[in-house]
Image 1 (cartoon, helix red, strand yellow):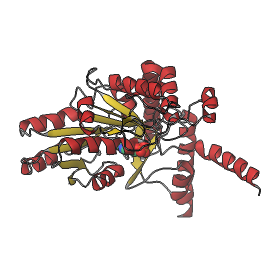
Image 2: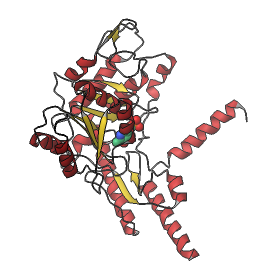
Image 3: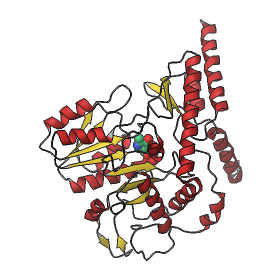
Image 4: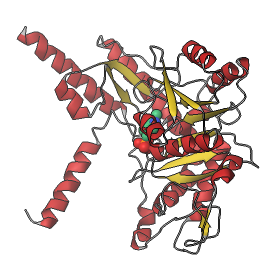
Amino acid sequence: MNDEQQVDELLTKLIEEKNRVLGYPVAKDFDYSRLYEFFKHPINNVGDPYEDNTYKVQTHEMEREVVDFFAELFRADPTDYWGYVTNGGSESNLYGLYLARESHPKAMVYFSESTHYSVRKNIHLLNMQSITIRAQENGELDYEDLENTLQLNRDKPAIILTTFGTTMTEAKDDVSRVKRIIKKLAIQNHYIHCDAALAGSYGPFIEPRIPFDFQDGADSISISGHKFIGSPFPSGVIIAKRSLRDRIARGISYIGSLDTTITGSRNGHSPLFLWYAIKKMGVKGLEERYRHSLETAEYCKQELIKIGVKAWTNPGSITVVFPKVAKSIKNKWQLATDEATHIICMPNVTKPQIDEFILDLVSEKEAVAGVM
Ligand SMILES: *Cc1c(COP(=O)(O)O)cnc(C)c1O
């Protein structure tokens, strides 16, 4: 096989596999061909998107508009927000925890068992003290355990990492409830970072509303750009209070900007891609995507129940959770699995795909029954 063939083969394989991703939260219904010309240029968003930079082959203006869009969606104080486009939700979480630590260096971090693995690693990288809180059966934070644990550590500032859409069951921690617990215990120094990697992009449309944003009590919020919105490469956004970011701003003369971001060189294409997507969709389009996903999830759940599979969803969630399936099906449909498994009904997932998956499950069951 020569190099050309190898490239062709890879492409064919990716296209084939792409249509069978039911287990991972990546939207695949995007078309960025209008932006093709931009691949000919060395775009680099090094530095703070809000500061003057000497490197001009950048997309900072679009990046700021992306931040504006999500800040508004998350009801940030219009006079006190800041953010940037990251490499993904994990970097956004790292940034949120970094801001939290700079504000409260001696704090204890509290996060639940169902928290994304990036959080543990980030806490380790930042050398912070932490306590794991129990999760309820649906994957949501156990508020009672949080309250009791906070009570025992009342002398320490508290950083609480909430998740808005956990990885396995898409459970959503109630930020207002966490805030009330902090108030009740009169913990003066506190910080709430909300990891909304998947569900943040449609959080405002969930009915009844589940509190997660700045007005509900969050100090910073992270999302992934390649999940609900969709992008050919991973990206993320961190939105935080500007007053917090100002504490860590340090001038760097080499780039003539402030070194406020985690990495130096930063992807300059992803802010442009995200900008393009949100301009095309608008808030209305995002909401329609969510309604469509929700409907597909309901369909998927009902079809599973019909064939005797114990499927369930968290309120407002597009993730359908059910018991583990045979390995062949898990591999074919790329289902992430721990004690249970799930289908995430991203906007590109269709009813015919669900039907095909259900048929696979039925044939598998029949085959197993036939053997016995
Ligand atoms: C996907 C995800 C992350 C990590 O985001 P990446 O963009 O993959 O880095 C963090 N938290 C949650 C809840 C996620 O679902």
